[in-house]
Amino acid sequence: MADTNREGRERWGIAPCFIVDDVVATANYYRDRLGFGYERFWGDPPSFCMVRRSGIVIMLAQLERTGVMRPNRFADPEGGAWDAYIWIHDADALNAEFKSKGVKITRDVCDQPYGCRDFDVEDCNGYRLCFGQDIEGT
Image 1: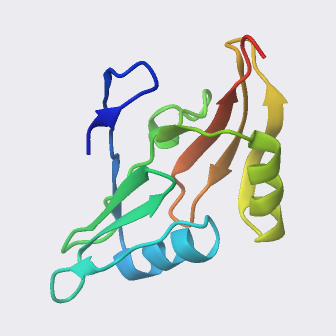
Image 2 (image 1 turned 90 degrees about the vertical axis):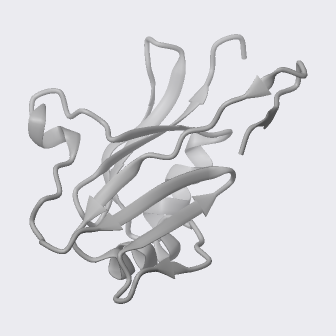
């Protein structure tokens, strides 16, 4: 998946893997609420799927036993740790899109001291995703 950035240097990518109890329901949530797409499921019954949007990939894996999901916020309930931070181009527009689809916004869009304008959402399994745009130098 490596490609090059504007300076011609190789750009890296990463795909977090979220363990979920129901991979089909989760993939459909990401499709219907968060605007991701997917091409297929792996396994019979389905146990793995990769959802994609704008070059972002999140892997969803279902184990044989349920109840083993552990979003980062459970380990850090005071800090509300994210499970993924996703850089985007327009935080306000994406925030409005998600609100119109009934996505659970856990922190509304705002400017941060680290130079990003971002907001948090919680998916159907309790995973926290932060979507942010770089505002330094703009």
